[in-house]
Length: 204
Image 1 (cartoon, rainbow, N blue to C red):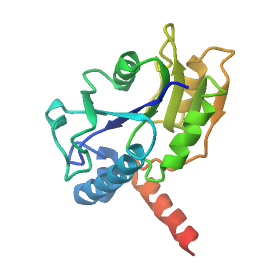
Image 2 (cartoon, rainbow, N blue to C red; image 1 turned 30 degrees about the horizontal axis):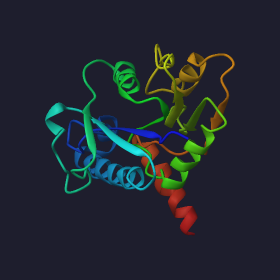
Image 3 (cartoon, rainbow, N blue to C red; image 1 turned 90 degrees about the horizontal axis):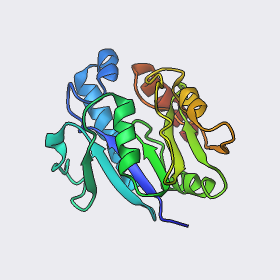
Image 4 (cartoon, rainbow, N blue to C red; image 1 turned 45 degrees about the vertical axis):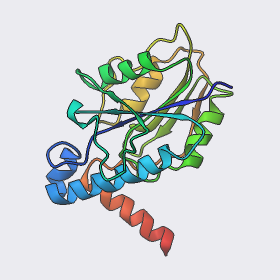
């Protein structure tokens, strides 16, 4: 099987840039700390497997940053470019090689190498794979890119309860779709509280 490509969409954990919705509920300092935490955990998982990681970041001045080694120098970096999320994801899909392509953000701290491997295995038997988020979005989307693959991101209602359903609905009617475990995407203060409560239950 062709080696998978993992596209990581992330921003530096800076006040006013990352986790702006979280900052409205918890304050900018705490939001920045959480952004750093989730990004570090995401990158640790993303750099721990037999796939090709590519970091898509914004703004462009962040392309050469290391963030205290969270973004190692060897990781290929590309600009997310202009436009909304649909245009930025379209750009990543267009630039990716043919074969399995996975998209993740940096909002789900429970992403693990095992889950990423499960997504790649799913694409051996399916046309696409979703990792659902509790809020109706998704922490992972993957598909097998071929020479005629069309983007499924058009007209998706991002940052809301319909994002995954919209992307799924854009896939070909006969597409075989796999679903991974649901994780918590930390976008709002309530998400952070829910994630902490779930961790406390696991420890208890």
